[in-house]
Length: 361
Image 1: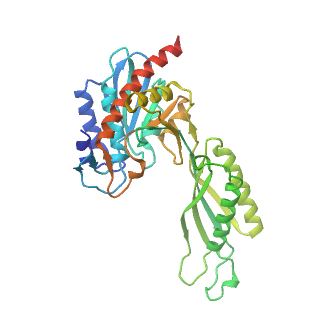
Image 2 (image 1 turned 90 degrees about the vertical axis):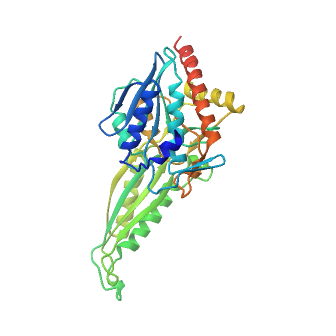
């Protein structure tokens, strides 16, 4: 089934064939209330009673085809690791749930690799969920409990005039001024972090720059985009205040005009380490792999942030696959790891039922 899923090429916002494939499979596996919502997410229900848990993977892949093939224990294809192996593992694990052992909502979301259209639509729904798991490749012995937040800002620097490139002293240069801003903002936001691990670092990365109108005229305007990742002990608002102060001070000092706008704002998220879902995964991994999983904080930002912050419930991210295989030109997954991943998620659901009932007593 994973091989069939990989043969469907589904870049962001072209996931319809995958949604229909999953809808058919959910029907075969005895799911109820199977629906494809207004943005293209597939949602299906299995089981009954408490706890109510959502298993959510994404159906889209990054652009670029990878020939689907098996070589030994490896299955190749775009999305093999990110994230059709986690998605299909969740589907088969969810199918194992029996009535009165909990209710599983299986979700295949759209546009995770794009603008998160799927998850943004999902969090608006009243679903009364107790726990959620997002399917991303973590490796089956690692459970992701935290993702950094993200701020993307567009900084526009304008100078009073332009001049001929042969007489650059006649005016300021907006690109060069933007370089000053980039260096200063990065230094101010990233200071005093010597003792932090990578998972707890605030990082400022310049990702796009656009300026100038001609090869022999000094630029009057320049726009720079920054991608800022925010660890779980900080928040977007405090970082925004630092950016605002910095931009104002540097503009005043350099005697140029500077304005910034926020393109994206996602708060960081960390699941409580002692929550039932984290404990259930720990027990599930120990049962199948005979070793404790590592709880990790990732440096990226995921759908988990959006839903965890909006719904205020324990959420983790988990799935078979090597995260370093994601988006690569020869993406693959270990078949053995994928199958063991299904078993671990099944065991997790059993332990979660017991832990949740115990907590409710």
